[in-house]
Structures are given as C-alpha cells and as structure tokens.
Image (tube, rainbow, N blue to C red; front, top):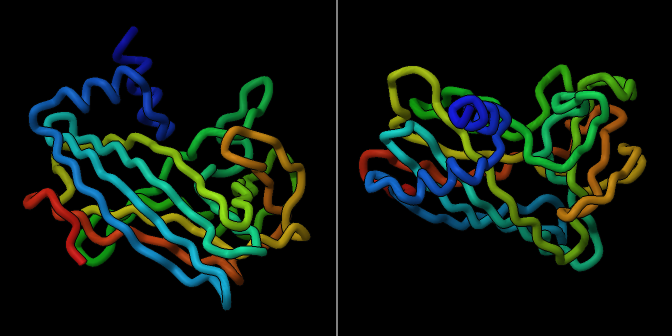
Length: 212
C-alpha cells in the first residue's frame, strides 16, 4: 500500500510526505541551491531561487523553488500547474504542481514545466489540454515543490529545471480558481508568443553542485 501511494505521488510530481522524509533521511542525498533571473519585458523581471535535493539511492530529486515577480504593476503567468484535466476525476480541482516533461538537451536531463506544442494551441474546451497558469501578482512570491523519480537504471549526469513564464494578459485566460498559491487560470488560446523559459543552471550530479 505504501509503495503504491508513493509511486502515485511521484508520478504526478507531488511531494508525498513519506517520500520527502525518506529523502531527507537518506545519507546519500545531496543538496544544492541556485539563484537566477529573467527579464520578461521592459520593467518586469522575475527571480528564481531553487534547491535540488537529489538521492542517488532512490534516483529521485526533490525540487523546492521560490519565484518572485519583480514588477511593481504587472502580473506574471507561471506555467507550473500542468494542463487542464490531467488530474481530472469526478471533479477537477486545480492547484498542485503538474508533472514535468523530461527532455534530453546538451548532454543533460531537463525537467520542464511548460505547455507542449499541442497544449499551446489548445481550444477553450474545458476537457481539452489547455495549459494552467498561476497569476503571480506584482511584487508577489510563489513557493512550491515537487518530486520526480527517474525511470530506468541510469541516473542523470547533469540536471536542470525550467519553467515557462509570461507577462499576464487576462484576455488570454478564463475560469480563475482561487488557491493558496494565487489564482490559477486556464489558457484560452495560444500563449506561446510572450512565453519564456526560466531555468536553473545545470546541476552536476557527480560534484553535487550547480555549474554556471
């Protein structure tokens, strides 16, 4: 029962409490932190503080992050919630961090929270694959975390996490839902034009540190 619950939590990118405690207790768990910034548009900058807690034994990484919208008057859309319907049961309840896509780039492994090609042009169908985004108010911060377990026997040698962000334009979204992390909106059309990727530096697994 425990194994099944743990696997389900990791598969959805959610930090299961037992998994988090287990990772923190692992003697082989390494921890590193990095800070980076991205200019979204004139007068709007977003900063990211991220911590990686990587367990070689479990082949698992816990990512804790804090995003800050540096603008005094412009909201920011953060696409870390996945797509509408991916957690759907009888009732859909947006809120948790979505499961990241895994891509291989430049000889490393990228965990990516960003709409895919199909989701970026999704229709307004509420049961479609429309991206979900947190509205980060001017000057506000968003703090969250997720767990990802790598499949297979090979551990990543280099690792980074990227999240898509964009200047928030309410005309491109609908159906806001209030959550503890702020309003979560469903994109109604193509949001790719103003979207940018905010990425951590590469984390070198062998040296257990971020490399600029």
